[in-house]
Length: 258
Image 1: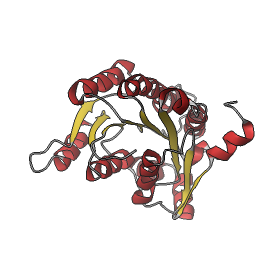
Image 2: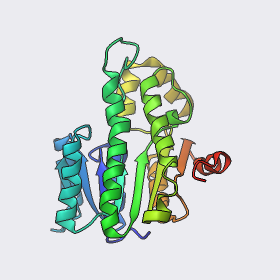
Image 3: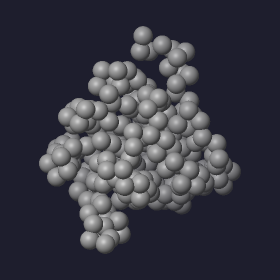
Image 4: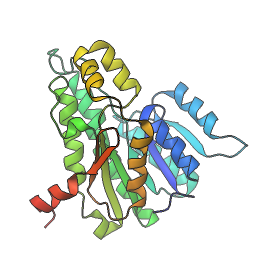
């Protein structure tokens, strides 16, 4: 798929990976709609992207755990731009003491990181079909491949995203829709910064493994959009200058789509 003149939705697009992806897509000639709860950052980003009196990006308030909000996001884009080509289910959270604090706060992590991805993909399929197909990218994490004992619910949610994504490997055959994921290690985002401040183990892990350059992470998203051979795959980026496709071999070994 070529990116120029395509219409993209990015949830959690006001900051971090989502914001960087929005900037890259606009640079490549796409129009982007950002869905996020951070209106201040979202509007600031939109103002930066919409220069020279050209509308390259739009912001829509969207709390992804509210499925009505998600539908309104997709419906707004459909009615405004006439269709959707690219969906990035990117919104995600991580919480201190999400499991060990003996509360039910962990439910919000599952709702945001996994349930909203599933619903976003479901809506993505519904709306991309109207366009004749397209691409869905789900933001996973390295902790969706390896366990993270200090964030067990976050890790479980990201394992779920990767398993869910792999299970949709045949969707391209039936609906011309490719679903893939990106699983990176630590990136310099607000989430990593905030968790590092309150969780020494994460700070130690960041120091040990280092931060992956944002450009390298965004390149993985661009590769997924442009490479028509990727279906049900996950691009893993464990550390700097080391990206690899890991799910295709798992799919071939386990034969889940036969």
